[in-house]
Amino acid sequence: MSTATKPKHIGRNISRIRELRGMKQEALAIAIGMSQQTISNIEGSETVDDEKLNVIATALGVSTEAIKNFSDEAVLNIIGNTYHVDNSSAINYVCTFNPLDKLIQAHEEQIKLYERLVQAEKDKVEYLERLMKGK
Image (cartoon, rainbow, N blue to C red):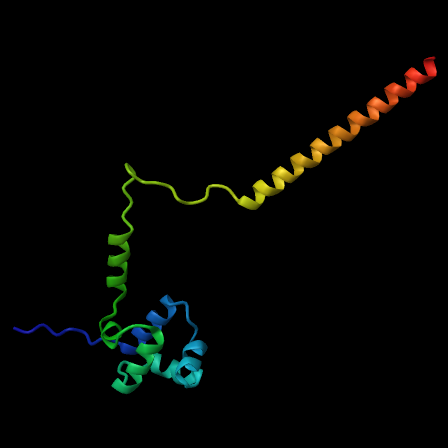
């Protein structure tokens, strides 16, 4: 009894790997000296000849086997297994405030301090003027 496995859609795999790399079709096309339309056609094809596949794999920084065996399920499994969060020992490395907001806040506090110093000097001058008139 043999189980028929659904053939891999190589073009779709190329498309998904390209997207995961954050690369547009145009960028891949330029990298391998083809037109964007050609890349679009390749990504729509269920099969891709080995020569083109080698060139594309090199441009994407993966092996031809990685393209042939790629599956979204495998990626999700890797992500799920790699990024397991155990809250009992989790350490938060994420910045919990916006540094720019803190800088602006410090600047505003500095302005208020200068305004208070200027007001104190004005009050001192006014006090001294009143003392002078009193004599």
